[in-house]
Image 1 (cartoon, one colour):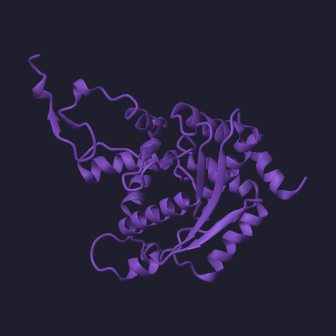
Image 2 (cartoon, helix red, strand yellow; image 1 turned 135 degrees about the horizontal axis):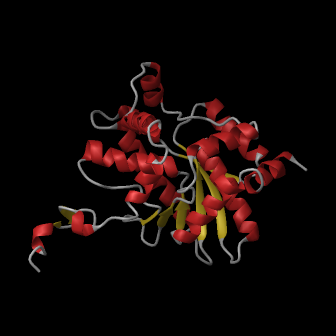
Image 3 (cartoon, one colour; image 1 turned 120 degrees about the vertical axis):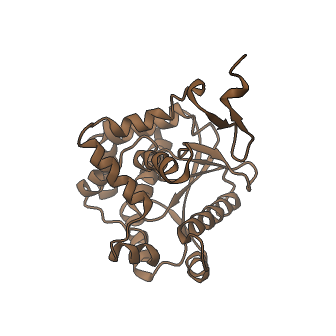
Length: 276
């Protein structure tokens, strides 16, 4: 059996419960994939997106219905060794990638003020939608996982003064007919790390020099702060992470002071229906 086959086999055998079942569960629970979809799996070169690509590849082979998949890599300005590593891993895992170039890092580094990470994320999303649409895709799939979702929920409360989470799917506001899906939504990061180590795979980390500078200066991001907070809370209550995850699946509007029906929508108060 070749190495790429062993890597794929590990997902459905050794990591069936922790990765594969949660991957399939998210697709079913949130209705992420439908017959005749054409999905662009967006690969950054990190562990999450590479696992996603392999899961999607296996699912396509054995799905009950037909759907198409493209595997796209958007190069925002990687240094040569990072790009080479992505190509090497794609070959090891037998993933047929398409690479597109963009000037994102150059643009972000030149911008003054604001959040470079926010600008980078927005630009990446736009380029990915464009590349996917040009290929005839109606969806893009990103590698965000369980930990990303619960960290986003806490970040919105602690730093954004609102209750908001990372959605398992959403419609694009700028690219008509396009959707974004997150099939690893129920997969925990620790299991992704374990899978990568088991298969002796080495992936690139964030290739942004801003992120690297923060790491070298021990100047962690808000997300890293929240990640450490959750880790600390789990020492007292091991169910903390799952409780955060379930909390946004079980919102009782009768106990909410104010809410909006959509982003930018009118703010409603509980007083509007209090006496009804």
